[in-house]
Every structure is written in C-alpha cells, then in structure tokens.
Length: 556
Image (cartoon, rainbow, N blue to C red):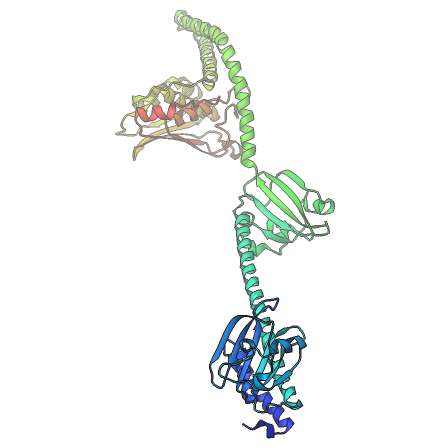
C-alpha cells in the first residue's frame, strides 16, 4: 500500500484504525503485543520488525521477538542487552534512525536484525509511558527509508499504544494476583471464622458478647438454646429483653460496672426468674478493649454450678456422716449393753406377770417396745458406718410381707387401721436377703401407720410378678408428702416427723437395701392424698446380686 501519498490527517486516521484493530485482537491472543507488532509492520510496510522486552527487574536480560513478511514469529530469550543499534537508542531514550549498508557499523544482528532480511534502514524507539520503560521496537527497511516528521509522530503513537497495552496487561496481572491473594485471604479468614465459630459453639457454658447499649454482638449455641433460638436470631437484640424478658437491665447486672471500670466482674448464686428449673450460676464478665484502651465490648460467661454446689453439699453431708459414724462406733457398745438388759428384763417380767393384770402388762410391753426401737436405732447407725453382709437365697416374697405384717400387727390394732393385702398368684421365689427385705417392709409399713391420723385409715399392699420383675406396692390414705419434701425423703437424717419420733435413717436404709438387690423404690404422694411406694425388684441370681452388693453400699 502507498501510505506515503496520503495526507497527514488521513495517515493519522489510518494509523488509529490499525491501532484500534490491534487492541481488539490483543484481547483474543495470549501475547497481546503480537497484534501491535503486526500493525506497526503493516502500516509502515516494513520488511521486518523487532521487539525487545525485559525479563527481569534490573533489565540485564531481554527476550527478542522478530517477524518478517510472513505470519511466523521467532522468539529468543535470555539475550544480554548491552550493545547494538537498539541498545544505543535505549541509552538515548528516543526514536533514532540508522542507514547504510547493514544499517551502520554498530549493527548487532543478534539484537537488531531479522532473519533473512538485509538491513538498509532501521528506525527504533522505546516502548514507555509515564510509569516505566517496557522495551524497544525496531522497524527494518520500512517502505520509505527516510521517515519524515509525520511518520515519526505516528510511529511514536504506535509505541505509546503498545506501552499502554503493556501497562494495562501489567495492571490486570497485578490485580489478578491481588484478587487471588484476597481470595486466598478470604478463604483463610472464612476457615478461621468457621473454626472459631465451631469452638465458640462447642463451649458447653453460656457465652455471649454485648456492647455498651446491651446489644448482643455474638452468642454461642449453648446460650441461644436456653431461649430456644439460633445465635443468628439473637445478634443485634438487647440481652435483657431476649434472654430474660425484662424491660430494663437485670438487678446486679455486671455489664455497666465493667464498662465503667474496665475490670472483670463476678456474680454467684443467680437463678433466672423466667427459667422453670432453678439453677445456680457463676457469672463472669470480661472487658474487651479497643486500640485506645477503652472498653468496646463485654464478654459474659455463665457457668451452671448447680451440680457443683450439690456435690459440695453432699461432701459436707458425708463429712457429718463420718463424724456421726465415729460417734456411733464409739458409743454403740455402751448403749447396747443397757438396752439388752432392759429388753431381757422386760421380757422376763412379761412371763412372770399375771395376764389378768392388763395395766401392768401394757406398761411392761411399752418398755419392751421402747427398748426394741432404741436397739433398732443403734443398728441403723452401725449399718451406716460398715459394709453390710447380704445373704442371698430364694425366698417367698408374699411370705416375707406377711411376716412383716405380723410383726407390726399390734400397731394396726391399737390405731384401728384397716389392712388389705393382695398377694400375687403364681409368683416364683425371689433370690434376696430375706432379713433386709423384711426390714424394708416394716419401715414402709410403720411410716404409713404414722402418716394416718384419722380413724378410717387404710393401708393397701399388693404384689405382682411380670416379665421377670417383682412389684410390691404399699399405699396409704394418710397425710401425704409435700412436693418440697418429696425429693429429700431418701436423704440420711431427713425427717418430717416431730422431734423424738424419727431419726431420718429408715428410708435411706431402705433405698440402700433395694439398690443392693439391683432394684428401684419409687414414690408418689401429695398433701392430703396419701402416699404410694412401689418397689421393683428384677429377677437376679445370687451370684449377680453378690457382685452388685459386694461394693461398700454404706455412705461412709
């Protein structure tokens, strides 16, 4: 094409079209500089074109791309860039022309030349913008060997466009690298967040963070479950409203003092009013400081210490039992001796007294009963401090209950209480410690008798065998047990009887004996509705029961 015959404006417009086409092709090719090099070559109708671009930051090595008349590129990497025509132009940092055979004596083919093209004229210039220099471009034997000022301006336009393309590519690469780094950082942050969230939610204690306006910034799963919500549903809400249903901060709230002082706080023994079951809490409050050392948020840790408090109470109770056991061990022998004497002499008196003297018989009988009761108290105290010996053998459960009824029959008759015993039929013998079970029946029967204050008192006893389990039910229509006391009746030394009427050891001992038989003792009662005790004893062999009971079942 004869571009030299066109006007300056036409040439400029033609060059812009070439550049525009090169920019469009650069978006499609992996090497965006190739379309620009072809555009420069074609516009100036050169026999060849050379591009040098730097491989490293110190610009000591370059890669050379060269193209002749055809579409094929030749690429050479790792060239030292320290001599040749292009190096001189690089040093001068401007467009330069070289003419003559081989384009001058400084011509260096490895850097400046194009294969199979004999250079007669070379024009070259730097590819650069205001930020950096990217490389050098050389035209070998353009159509008009002596390029005029207009052509130099257009050549500079091509070089600037190529520099812009390089700069855009560089920025895009850097942005992609930054984006990849940001993506990796985001994934790392996400993983860290998930790990912290999992750790936060796996803490069994209640944990949450609030700001100065009592608004929740974070809540763990344990605390959210207590109000039957998910943590995300609570963030941003006011803590005392969503947690406790209050319209103002809780009494003795730790949050405000911690914000004011910047020091941690602690509160014990708090039970939330809107929670059904009364629990004891150890609440700790910690400040979270900002960069200026001011309290920005507050973290609250609520630990349920109900079981811990119960264990502490049990430890205190066991300590008392140890002291009582030591006392019982020391005085049991001294008390048993006079009791044995009283009991023996009362029985001898009963043999000698004329049965017709009913008043005297009744008095001596009361002495005997009192001695027996005192002896039983001592036995109970002794059993609390030593391992009991259980002798397991087959017995008739109905017969065991019948014998217990006979032993307390005088109590029924003196109080005019009706007894209804419904023994189960077809019951196989149960392997048990007969004396111990009989003691349980007597204890439950005496409790039932003492609970009945009316003249129409009634006690119902029934037995049943079903699916390898023995059931014994003892029911009375007495005063009943309050809900407050129902959970404590099996505690040692707990008694609702008036002073002097009970030691509080009977039901505790009964429970221990039933547990030694791998059984259960259940109770249902309400004030004014009587009480129902149900004993469930599984069918076990003597060997199995021996293994269960050979551990020390005592409390000390």
